[in-house]
Image 1 (tube, rainbow, N blue to C red):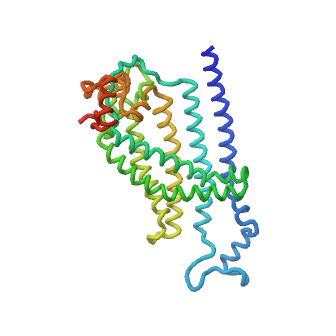
Image 2: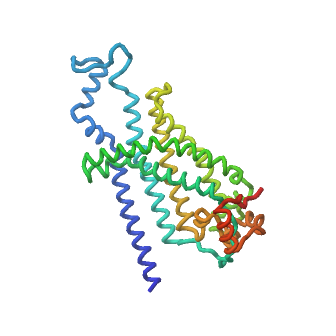
Image 3: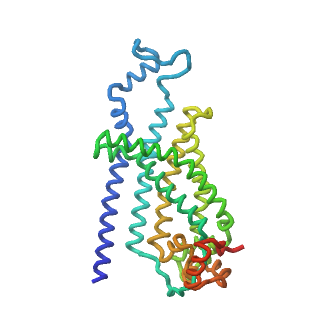
Length: 351
């Protein structure tokens, strides 16, 4: 009976994934037509009128300059930016995110969760102290809020405006913009602190190449060597250290338009910010899946600070060999938490 329920649940997930994929496809097609937005944004002005304004062949109702400045009513680079954003960035970003969700659902339905091969020993190793856990969850929470508000700013009008009307949509987009603009710099600062704190454990090693060759242990037999961080975790770290910092830098350009950057610079920053953020959001789904539902006992390390010996030996054997003498019983862990507070000690990391 349990097997039937499990199969039914997996088929239901597959059906939902297919329906979501169709929805993503339709939304992406709508995004790929920039003229639809133009007709909504400026329904009373057509392309011929804009060309007349730009050439100066218009009456007194049109002006191509403001006072004696060089301000132009028509900025041709703005149209290029709109085409890039609506024809390429938005639809393909949506396809990448939807595709990643579909891949994860299919992987779960076909492969399932990676359970521990050996029973738990009950002896624990300290992996993440309180400071690192608090830093991780702060960065993760801000990342999720920024991803949701960013997706709402980019795609929300095609979903929520039609469902709830202009009034609700106006409040929703204003709130998203406020949260995104003010939380973005905080996220940037905390991410830099996190990256600096973890750089020592994420330096590439020779055995990481073998980890990738064997797909993290899914190809061939036997376990693959991994230190405190395995090859996949290091790849995510360096993606954040490169693309993540680029997203932060471009976000600061957009957030503080009072340092002399021109409109063209802001437009390029917007494109870079959107491409990088959409890519990171898609990859983050894999990171979240592996760290929660996809791998047994992985989440415990970031919630309690401790991991079981069996998990450490199976997933991070090189690190386990260095710290196995520091394993504590569950009673000792409870006593230590009661006297010192959770995670006061330094993490059991290689030197």
